[in-house]
Amino acid sequence: MLAIFLKTLPFFAIIGLGYWAGRTRFFSSEATAYLTKFVFYFALSAMLFRFSANLSLAEVLNWRLIGGYLMGCLAVYGLATGVAMLRKQDIATAAVEAQCATIGNVGFLGVPMLTLLMGAEAIGPVMMVLAVDLIVFSSLIVILITGSRDGRMHIGVLKTVSLGLLRNPMIVAISLGFIWSALEIPIPDPMNEFLAILGGAATPGALFAIGASLAGKSAERVEVALWLTFAKLFLHPLCVAVAALWLLPIDTFSASVVIAAAALPVAGNVYMLAQHYGVAPHRASAAILFSTVISIATVSVVIAWVSQL
Image (tube, rainbow, N blue to C red; front, top):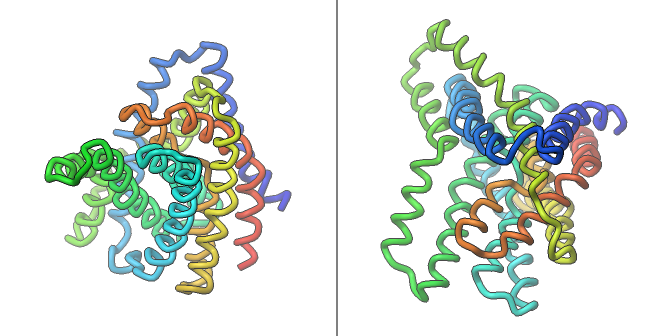
């Protein structure tokens, strides 16, 4: 396990460097926002397009993998929702808490780290996990929050969800990449080099941006945040493991990748959604902070365990 920890340590060290830069104001909140925008719209999109354009959708589209991962996610999502409702929280707040318990930082942390640690074969499963998170759960939280406020479902909610998916650069990059692959168009060398150089900025840029953004996170509602951290770092990978290894078994390598992806800390976009809708942003912020710090140890443990599979 020590070897795995030492391999993951550089990733978290860059996050720590970003945190220091944000905490000392060497990197302002405005600079962090622009760095995040650069990574989100350009560097990470270039990396995802290049990955998917060199993959065959038929080879990576594993419905059992998607089903197993989704089954594990829904178990944790339902549990977190139930706990929130028992605490007399409204539907919108319960949806934010369930999102914290289920959605990991796959885009900014998982894609670069897991593909480097687990090999190029991990790219396909990681991208399937990212697609499920973006398409299913990013849509679900918008539907629940908007529907609970309006008291009913209407066509405007579906329009908001659809536009949100179409405007998400990660979904666009993955989709265009698979289309490019399906058309069997070779990537010209200058274009491939361009994507490689731009995509190469995704890993350090994303990790630094995570750290810098954590510097502005607060630690309010500590008890709730710790419960959500426990659900995300322990219950989520456990439920995915049960689903992917026993209930809807898939090959052990793919199972190990999705379990490792489930062990990642809470995604930053959960806070962005919570802040946008004005629903429990402080507890989402605290959950991101705690889960990221604790995951320095737990992610190594999970990756070491799944490596034995």
